Image (cartoon, rainbow, N blue to C red; front, side, top):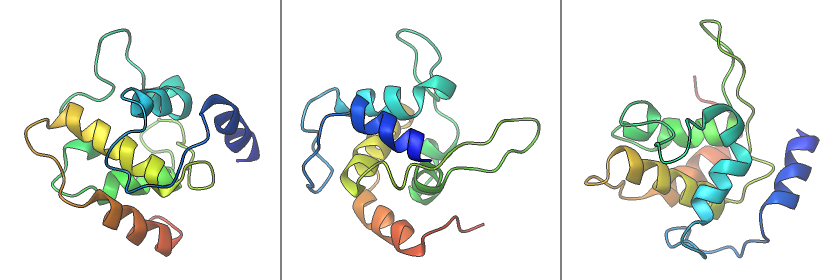
Amino acid sequence: MFATSALLSLALPALAQDAGITPLHPDLPARTFAAACGACHYRGEGKTPFGTRGPAADASPDDLVQFILFGKAPEFGEGQMPGFAAALTDADVTRLANWLRAIAKPDAPWADVPASVAKMRVSGQRED
């Protein structure tokens, strides 16, 4: 986890804590995705990272936020996903979740991603 944190601290600019809804730079969520998630989830130039399925398309942001913060154990022959709770601020996670949601369901943004991030961060672990 230290290597991931160190890599992200070098790859991402220092971020101010804010409400997390408005990016500090328009492509900041895409850059965060590229640095933290892109090695495994990127599907090529001009294509969406997940399409319209998966946790970014769910009715609630909770699962996506849990995956970002705490990762996911391997299943069905897939590799393990690391968590980024130590490397990303609440604002980073909020921006990333909102960006992924805008790709998956552009006409149905989530109402309160910062509350989901705060709730999941307090739990300190996946809620499986």
